[in-house]
Image (cartoon, rainbow, N blue to C red; front, top):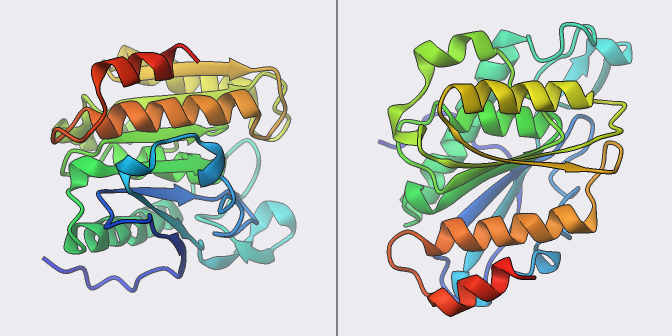
Length: 242
């Protein structure tokens, strides 16, 4: 069924051959779709994976914690203590992200070859949306973020994505999204039986080279383990040894 939700504006990067997979990458608060557009060449993934990268722009809304300044945001943050609890905004953005997933399916990419990724507030939306998506995804990458509305997950979680591969990473010195929020998210998901690959890096609210390399290994793994896509066992082993 074609979604009636208006599509978000996006920055897109096509592979050098027909796309076989898609990574939808969600930016953080106040950034936009260009923020991580330079990342794909640094991931070290094989061109044979033929990944289309989609970087959507979040809507422009007033953000209370920033004195009501209008900026790209997936949802409002009223106070730092109530982080991530703008339920109306979160669910509205999840619907918009679902529409992007539906477009990729319409363009011929099975849901099982779609990865949702995000940084900070985008990480929160990747987790919120991906864990509720009705069809299986290849995986979810959540960097320097947290799981919003986690109390509602048990009732709303998709059985199709209970076995989805999850890569969670956080800076030990993050002064924007405290490390404890990332660790708490990993603990909650592990306790619920999710396949969580949790990484801590000696950094602040940012992305580091080691983390980028880990993301590349994760994408290689999840996008070569479905549908018989190319990547020999020996090639997979060499990836993990780097």
